[in-house]
Every structure is written in structure tokens, then in C-alpha cells.
Image (tube, rainbow, N blue to C red; front, top):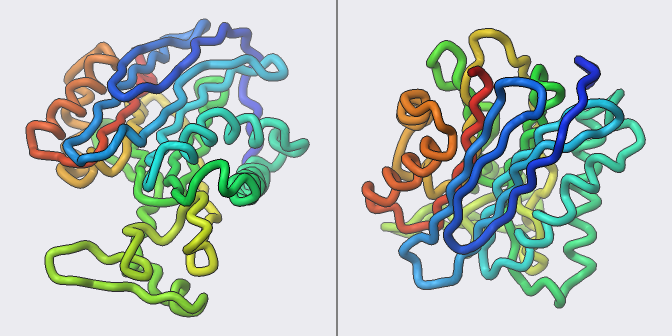
Length: 283
């Protein structure tokens, strides 16, 4: 298990928010790292259901970059809840600094239980999640449930750091829990004919057949690591990891890079909500 501690560095906070269509940017207070985000409502006939977090915070003399995309379904209550609470729950874990994998996994589980206990206040929907914690600019911790995705660029080569949790790939787990996977012509695979992901926060009506434990991975940020992209499946449905990296690397301003990715997804007739965070790890 790697330790989270890298450098002792001061920082200031740059907050991130979310709206139906928004963009913005921020930067580390002590280094060249910058981020930009862009969220665009898709063509589907429902309100915007994507939320995000993008900010730097100071914790115990360390600078943490906190980045996340939450892609809701059947309403925006669950992703809005995650935006407010998930990172708080992760960082309040007592062994976060010594055992980040265990702490992140436990925080995901506790957050899901809190969401389920708030039913019906948070409705019957749910949300996918991909989160990234950047520690002192040198260590990344990625966690996800669902099909939002984290992709790293190392020397221009795209490296997927998250796992797409699709019903067909986790059919065994779903069927063991008493559910089934439908594969109707012209449609994607769905859990019990409803949900197109096999892991999610919330979704109380399907929870006995779903998992909410995250896949967690870490990566060192070295001289060859230049871009991190977090995005909802509105991006990944219409472009490959390498295409997204190639687009983002050409644009120095990460906000403009994020906007370019969401615009390209729209131009490719992406119908889902489209949300993207680009973190430029080098100057």
C-alpha cells in the first residue's frame, strides 16, 4: 500500500460548482497544475442530471486536488447529494492518509447507505461516479462505480484508470443476486431491463441486484504525465480514450480543452448529458 504523503505544500482553495450548462477553471497555488471543466445538457428530454467537483483544498499541510463527475439517472437528487458529501466522507476517514484504498472504499459504502436511508427524500434514482484525488501534485487516487471514466495521458498515450461497470461484464454477480440482464435489439444491456450500469449509488429498487463498491487504482504523476480527463459516458459513447487525449493535449488552456471535448461530443450527435474535467498536470 502506497502512502498518500508526498510533499508538504501550502495551497488556496478554488471551488467548483455545477449547473445545467457551465464551465470554469482553477489552478494549484504552488505549481503549474491547472484544471478546466465543461458541462452541457444533452439532447435527451429530461433536466440536466450531471454534477461535478473541481477544486484544490488544504488538508494537514497537503494540497489535495479533488475532481469528480457524477452522472445521475431518474433525477438529479443523488448526484447533487454526492457533490456535497462524497469527498467530505472520504477525507473524514481516520486512516485516509495511511490506507487510502480502504478509506475510499469505506466512504463509498457509507455514502451509499446514507443515500438509501434518505429515501424517499432523494427519490428513486441513482448516480454513477468517478473521483480523483491528486495529492501534492504527485500521486493520483482514482475510484469509480458505473461508466463515467478517468483517462490519463502519459507521453501522449491514453491510459484508462477506471473500470466501466457494464451489465454484460458483471452478469454473474447480477444473476447471483437474483437479477437478470436484458439484451433487447437496438438497446444496450440493462439490469432487470432498466439500468445500463451494473454498479451505482442509490437505485434502491434495484439495489439487491447492484453493487456499489468502487474499483480503486493509483498512479504516480511523473514528468511524462501531462493530462487527466474525467468525463461522463456522454463523452465516451462517441469517442475513444485516445481521441479524447489527442484533443485535450492540443489545447493549453484546460477549460478550453474541456469545452472542445464537450463540443466534439455534441457534434458527434451525443444525446446524453456531457460532462468533462481536464486537469493539465504540466505547464
